[in-house]
Amino acid sequence: GAGVSQSPSNKVTEKGKDVELRCDPISGHTALYWYRQRLGQGLEFLIYFQGNSAPDKSGLPSDRFSAERTGESVSTLTIQRTQQEDSAVYLCASSYLPGFSGELFFGEGSRLTVL
Amino acid sequence: GENVEQHPSTLSVQEGDSAVIKCTYSDSASNYFPWYKQELGKGPQLIIDIRSNVGEKKDQRIAVTLNKTAKHFSLHITETQPEDSAVYFCAAGDTGQLTFGSGTQLTVLP
Image 1 (cartoon, rainbow over the protein chains, first blue to last red):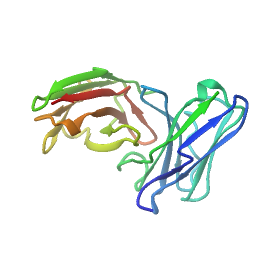
Image 2 (image 1 turned 60 degrees about the vertical axis):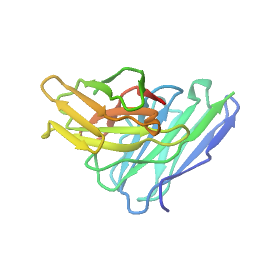
Image 3 (image 1 turned 45 degrees about the horizontal axis):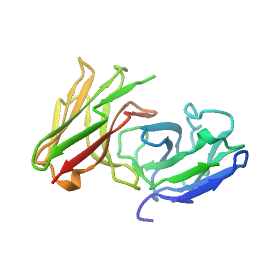
């Protein structure tokens, strides 16, 4: 596609439920990142995938958070047993070059509201 | 890990005036410093970046300066226009991950 695509754009869920967020990166981009953005705040790094290397999970806030990516395609971020503090916009970005030698292209985000 | 502080959190300027946003970082290993602009309801978009071997970079009305000794870098927007109104984020990093500042809400008043 033309850009990074994320779905759903909005998700409202009840506390304790599991949610799955999807990111479709730009074709050919080897690197994929997930960030969390709480209301009025900056971007908090969650996880980074680079090709077939082991992902950098150092930003995941708890074991309720996990993410997968198959090859250089779609990624899913899963939040289990959601809590109200998980409410945020989850942003996905992809990059053609590994590390930070290239521009990050962000999707429009998935806004998660946990009631 | 890296820590990036960004100031001010909000900035209002008159159309045509200049705007300056400043960031400091903590990790001397960081060598890449991008600036992103985020419009309401959109993902951040890169507007300019600078690497540690350069002290200043300019692209039309925007410029970024970097002082590696002092570990700070700044974004300068000249001749501001209403469409410059957005949230601006600085970031710093090396290979691995980018650490973002907390953002500056810039409002350009007509």
